Length: 298
Image 1 (cartoon, rainbow, N blue to C red):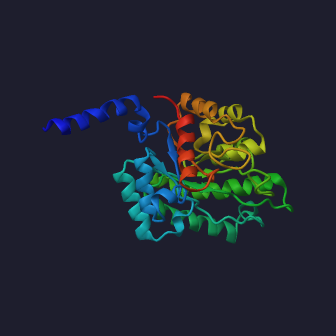
Image 2 (image 1 turned 90 degrees about the vertical axis):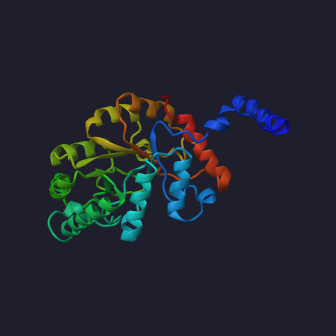
Image 3 (image 1 turned 180 degrees about the vertical axis):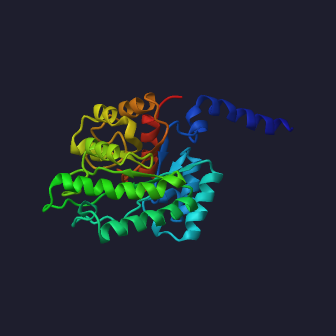
């Protein structure tokens, strides 16, 4: 090696050693945070496969895609293969078409139940192609002309039939309670209610998606409510309040909440279901920095 070349190489070494963040910026996150399509498009471009690759390069180990059923079967398969190649897990996609205005599953037997069960059957094939295990289910709107406990029974019976479809495949539908402000009039709003539904369905294929953003708005008291519903929670989603942006931008102490969940033994996926607080590449870097800040230590 020429002396001049050796000097150039050695001159760079102290810089890297004294700036460990630069050499470790793409280390894998300890928690399985799952970005979604479009969150990092300014860096990764519009191609969904390129976005997954870029996120893997940043250290993310999971991915979620609410609209996966709307993608072509070929693309679903490509996504699943890429996630496996990059050692990433596939998170949730939305299994059933949600009616935000009129009752569906609360009505019991009939066209709405039949449509739901068909969507669950179709979701089995989607899950196989993209290597998913979890799918989101929202039971829909209240029926204001029907007694609440009759609605409860109707939803439970529909979910039992859906779980029977999923069980042989080892798949799990996760019920997501949504808050009254963003989605007024829905049947499922609280973690305790979802817990009761899951207990009544009594299936390993019917669990809770605890969306921390929604539950902060709906009733707060996050850690005690998580503890109370713990054995039925299979998935979490993240978003700060107010604004539904990345952690550290609102009132939720995500460092404490995520540390608590991790210490109790949860090793599943935490979906990043929120927008970016800032635009452009700087905003995307701010999202990554926020998740580095609230990630748990090894």
